[in-house]
Length: 366
Image (cartoon, rainbow, N blue to C red):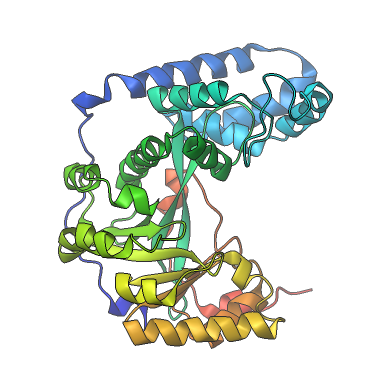
């Protein structure tokens, strides 16, 4: 089944007016980012020349958006790696007073400090959204964009670390909604034929605030795909189906994200009846050489057909993996081989080009 056979209806997409409920948060983070950038560019040492040039390139890619430019700069540079090396000898030992190792954290931190830094990110909306293209395997065209959150904060932690710490600090829902607001705002810059993958936990999908937020956005429900991250509890499928039913009647799609990375009950998936099953990269990596992974992928394609869903492969990094998932009948795919995540609207606007599958699979000339 081609993903284009399942239409994503949409109307005109308008840039939303600045929300009066933002409380000036966006100007605040922009002022903070601009001050940091000005400070870095004011340095004159030759050892920092390369960093200044990289920062100027990011500024040119994000005109009028210093917060996005600074975030991309921090993600790309390798100075953080050297900083971690210098800091390694100063990290308090696990179990020492004031140091508690939280799951996924780069440095041991007290619970109070973790909560404080997450609250600071929430107050300043110190995050931006990157999108990664999702390509239809029949046509080669980009049909969707998966939203990924990038944080502007100390420590260089991954998004997974931030969300893990937020869960520990009982701020998971707050961070989920902040990331969703960021993604919905950034999605206004995407080509309007693309669907938008929005990652949310099952708990957030059950929050009564979710339909209110989605109704206020200018993004058409027919372009939204809610990607459930994390395993469902035995009690969640029925209320989840009921809570999302009105939104799905308006065109919203539901996806099970990271299928294969944790034990997901087939019975639960049947109950939820997702429109899309996204296979985790751990299942896809090496699928071209691992008979077990290949068999599991083929089984998931068959299962998806039974419930009327389509399968998207995540984490495609080689032409061999792409050829294998295509041969197994998967509908679409994403991964570094097909396009890296980017925060640059100029990159997003290029996702209108149609590529042939043979262009991916043909080895480059030696």
